[in-house]
Amino acid sequence: MDLDLGGRVAIVTGASRGIGLACARALATEGAHVVLVGRDADTLEGAAGRVRSAGPASTVLTIVADTTDDAAVRTMVDRAVGVLGGVDVLVNAAARPAGGSPIPPLAELTDDAVLAEVDTKVLGYLRTARAVAPHMTAQGWGRIVNISGLNARRTGSIAGTIRNVGVAALTANLADELGPHGVGVVVVHPGYTETERTAGMIADRVAATGRSEDEVRAELAAATSLRRIITADEVADVVAFLASPRAVSVTGGAVAAAGGERGVVHY
Image (cartoon, rainbow, N blue to C red; front, side, top):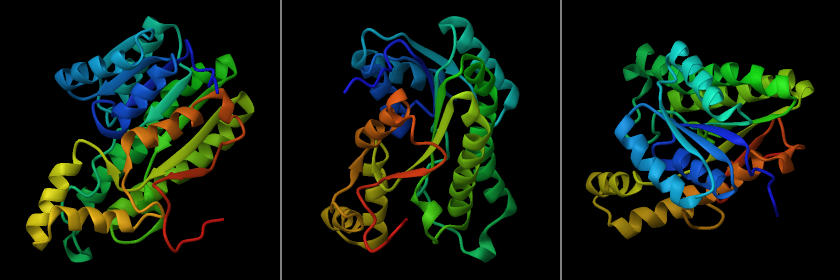
C-alpha cells in the first residue's frame, strides 16, 4: 500500500532516539522529508544519519529546540517551513522517559515532579501543535500524531497517568477544532517498548530483584497478548500509517500499539 507520504514534510519531536527516531525513519522510508527535533545537536546529527540511510530520497533536517520553550518551538517550525516549504505531518514524541526511576508514593511526590511531566509532554505537544496548525489549516490538510502511553489507561504512576490522560484529552480537542479544516489528530499509546534504553532498564531490574535477565524479559512480555515486547520500529509502522492520508477516517481517538493488553476490554 502506498501511504502517499512521498514529498510531504514531517516534523518529529523527540527524534534523537527511541520511538521518535523510529518514527522519523519510517516516514523517511515512505519518502517524506523529515525534520528531526531534539535538545542535543550531536545526538540529533547521529540520528539524522540513520534516517538518511532509511530514506535516501528524503531531505533530513535537524533543528535543536526544547519543546518546553514556546519561542523555541515557534522558531523551529518557522525554520522548517522556510527550508522545506511547509509542514504536513507532526509527530509529537518529545517526553521524559517513563520507567527510568522508581515511582514515588504520594507522600514523596512533589508538585514540581508532576508539573515537569505536564510541561514537557502535555504542554510541549500543545506548543508544537499550535505552531504547525496555521500552516496545515491554510493548505486544508495535515496529520498530527501524539505519542502517549498505556499509563493513560491504568494506575501505578500518578504523574505518568496524568500526563498521558492529558495528551489524550488534548488530542480529542485538537481533532474537533482542526477537523473541519482537513487536519486529523490521533494519539498512539505504546506499552513497554524495546528501545536503546531497554538493556539498561532491564539491568536495573535484575539488580533490584535478583532475577535473571531472561526472567525479567519474560515478565514484561507476559503482560502482552503477543507474549513479547514490541519494538520501536513496530510502533513506528503504526504511526506512519496514522500520519498518512490513508488514515483520514481515524481522528480524535486513541490507538494502542503495545502488543495487546491482557485481560482488558476497551470499546
